[in-house]
Length: 167
Image (cartoon, rainbow, N blue to C red):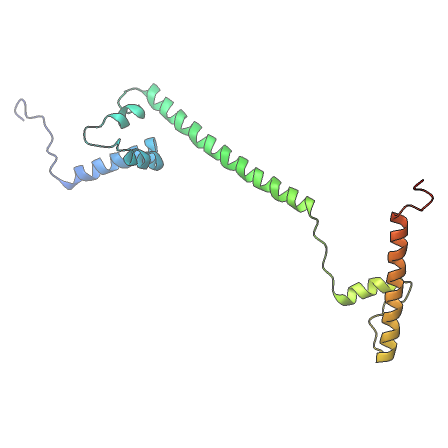
């Protein structure tokens, strides 16, 4: 090789691939996709633009700078993860508070409800669920309605103060 001929020929596809790989490393590993997109939107990316270089400390040399960049990026990721975790916890607490505030009543069938009512009236469990004639049903329902009315009147009497208590 003759003196002064120490240059590298960049005519092959290998250089395109190498440069593309360096760009990928910068965008994905050092700067980040979202940050790069935001810079592009703000027209900070360009042929003569040095904003990217200085903003992300790419123009300085040394292991200390690389470590600082890595630490800064790690801190950003941790902050983002902490924010996501806090939002998730807030949603979970809100959901729990909502569940506590409005307890869900267990759903039961008409048959199960009537069995409970029969037991509350001191009747056998099948009192309102067994087969009977129309006249017998009318009598059973009348008895049930009267018992409900009596219970309601007792509950209302307990809530209202007696006439003598008001004075």
